[in-house]
Image 1 (spheres, rainbow, N blue to C red):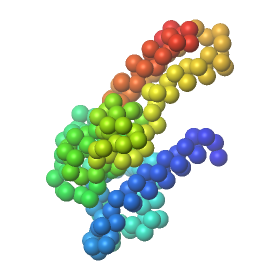
Image 2: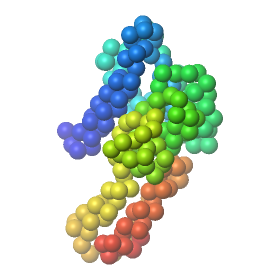
Image 3: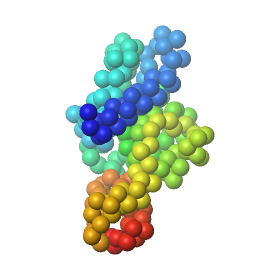
Image 4: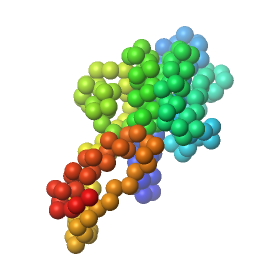
Length: 198
């Protein structure tokens, strides 16, 4: 198992644990757990989303009996996230779920602190306004962050070790993925610390 697969496995396990730990009230009341799930792409779930769905089933949550999942699909259109998040909130689920900072932020804002939001983000949840601190989030978001932007310095340092003659670095990101835009800045400024221009 390579590092990427191990990180993916750990990520799915942590998100699943977070999702499963919130709804015990629903099970005690014998009512189905209702999850509002915002997906960036279409109904063909990506690997992480599908892994989460499979893990819920393995955790004794069978869709249709004790689990109801209400999906909304952005079809790759980030301008629809707010509208779709609001549609999910109107359904009054027990929790809201998504993978990705832009999706989480839309759910977080739409829920107004009333419905727990579970998910994974690669941006800083503090900078995104999802938490007051990592130790004590203090808000209705729980999940995982990869702190991708904070790791930019370390990545540039590693690059300078493996390619000591390199002087210029390029940063490539998808402009439709909102969170990536905020990360391009840190990578850009951090590159100057190791003698690179970006």
